[in-house]
Every structure is written in structure tokens, then in C-alpha cells.
Length: 346
Image (cartoon, rainbow, N blue to C red; front, side):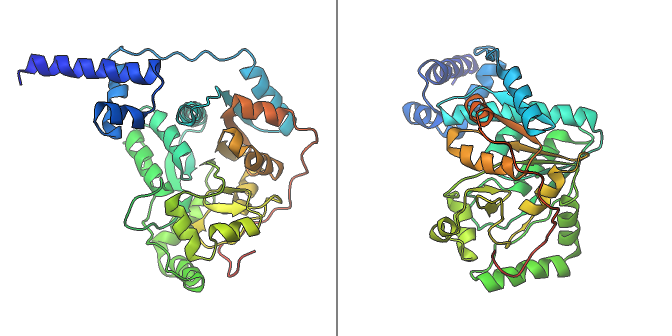
């Protein structure tokens, strides 16, 4: 095919892809089926359409975004709050949250030159990393969760996000990561396996301990059920969906489920625990940034807020409005409690 004709056809494809997504409001999967291309190709074409000026994106924030953020920050004693646009399209909502999280990340990095920064896992934090520009950043990066997975890639894990962020921030950045195999198919063996990794492998212990002492932690928040990949790992330690419901699981932060009291349900994974995160959150010099939104996550966000699992928040407008309408004040700071791996579920 002549080069000129190839460029013309690609330009037509960019236009059609942009039209379907931004005007007809089709999602990437629907566009991929319509144009008979992959979802990855669709995402790439949309980025190219933005870069080529075919699409110009502007964000018009409601007048009360800043007011609402300031109200939440003052009322709940948070260090910072960013409120982004709500969208009924969850894919678009995730992108809004990602951009808000990325903006807060850059603000923190400008203030804390050389900060030790930890990242959890999940698709929301993936959107944060994806929204960041590629440029040198003087930071040290740590995964907040060393959770093994099977051979098939089924979830966005902490090590992957730290690696991706490192390559966006080099050569000034440093990253400290170790790979961890999947857990054995037994709760007892899984606990012993995790304990052995800490005691027998110096690199694993050093990264894990450093992750528990970062200055800045970015975390997401999940609800029931966990995604397919993580459900397998939870099942190995006896926390299948039925058991999680029976134990009153409300939400998941950094691969750890917690109940309505903010108590972590079992400790089987090499992660910065809920108790660790609470200890960070009530330390003025440290920042724990929760990036989470969507009304289906409101109850879990409310519990996380009530039990001081974060001190900075990026959320959407509707969720922020519901938080602002809460009738009762939050309970006092919980007693400090830091813990590592324990031998039995709570």
C-alpha cells in the first residue's frame, strides 16, 4: 500500500474511533467490535487522536468542587481532598479519578523531593500511573503488596504498577521490587510460605519492611467480590466469597479485607496491613492517599474514613456529597497498632 494512502486510512480510523467514543459514547470494547480491531488498538488510537488535536478534552468542574473538597478536608481532618467529576460510565469515572490522583501525586512529589513512595494495586491506581507524564522524578518507589499470582495475568498488581511508574520517572527515580510466587493451595502452608519468605529471603524482608515505612502511600479500595485473579488467591487461604461475606467483609484495601469495625479479616499476604496503613494515616509527616469513587464503594469508603485508613482523598463529586451529608462525627483515632504476618484469621 502506498505510504500516503496508508496515512489517509489511518486518519480515517482515528476520526471514526474518536467519533464513536466521544460523540456516540461507545466504550472501547464496543468500538473494538464495531471496527474489528483489538481493545488495545482502540486505546492507542484514542490517545493518538488526542495528541494529533483531533480531540480536545476540557474538564469543566462544577463551581462547588473546590468548596466540597475544602468542607470534607476540614470536617474530617484530612490533609488534602480532590473532588473529580462523577460519571455513570465507570470507565470514564476511573479515568477522572486517575487524573485527580495523578495531579495530587505530582503536587506531593514537588513538595517532597526524594520521597519514599509506595503504591498498592488495582485498576484505579493503574489509571493514576497511566495519567502521569513521563519525566524524571526524584523518588524512591516500593510496592505495598508482594502478592504472587498465577501464570495468567488477571489483576493489576502492586509490583507491576511500581515498575511502570519507575520507567515513567527514570533516570532520577529508584524502585525496589521483588517477585513473589503464588501461594500454596492450603491456608497452613500459605502462612508458613509467607513466614519463610520473610525470614529466609533478605531481599523480600528488606522491601517489605521498607514498604511499611514509606512517607507517601497510594492505595485503592475494592468491594465484594474481588476480581477473578484475586478471588483465587483468597480462596487458597480459606477466604472464599461465602466466607468473606460471613465475616462481614465491607471493603478491601491493599489486598486486605476489613469489616465494618475497620478490622482486617486475616493476614495471609505480604502486604502493608490495614493496621500499618492506619498508623501511617495518623502520623502528620506521612501521607496515605486513597483514590476511590463510585456510589457502589461508598459504604467501604465511609468505613475506611471512620477508621482512619487514609488522610488524603481523591473521590468523585457524588461520593463526596454523600460523605459531606453524613450525620454523625467520626470516632477518635484508634489506638496505634502495627502488625506483621500472624498465624490465624481474625
